[in-house]
Length: 236
Image (cartoon, rainbow, N blue to C red; front, side, top):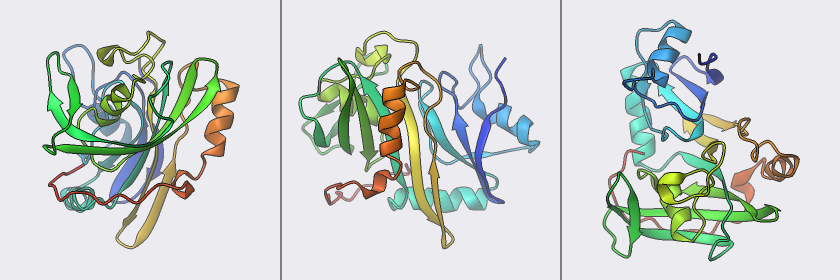
């Protein structure tokens, strides 16, 4: 039985939660999703999903409390006014230790995606990586677009599939090591900044990883290069 969902920020118009890994947003045939569980927990009839996290991903998820707030978030995501930062761990050495990953997102077999050299459905991510122990690297990823499986595909494309992400050939582990770590935006002139370090997964809670994450407590202050985004319609 799932414990109660951790609420990170409760606003009259929306709620921000720490989504557990391995639970889908919507109901599945064998498992209740986050939405119905949270509605029951908060004693509300309905919540609006304004962006998504994959089932295997943990961390920060925003849910609107009414349709007007959902529309505001839809516009914020479409205008790229919401900064998101993810943490991931890989057991494979990347082709480069930091930089940008760009490409067109192309759907392939078995519900997988891949990057190609086209500009179709362009996905752009920036990242830094840090050695946390022999054979393990921690990645801080800032996706500038919001495509399905974007971070997972980006790290696979540089030779570092996420630990536990068997869909993309990551090494087997106790979980998929992808976590939505930080989000920043302005909501009706109110600056919002939420940080949520991962608390599940042996490698995420190891002392060396926790120390490195502590050093990344203000991820927006890193020297991210300026990138001009191509015009595209995207709701997050």
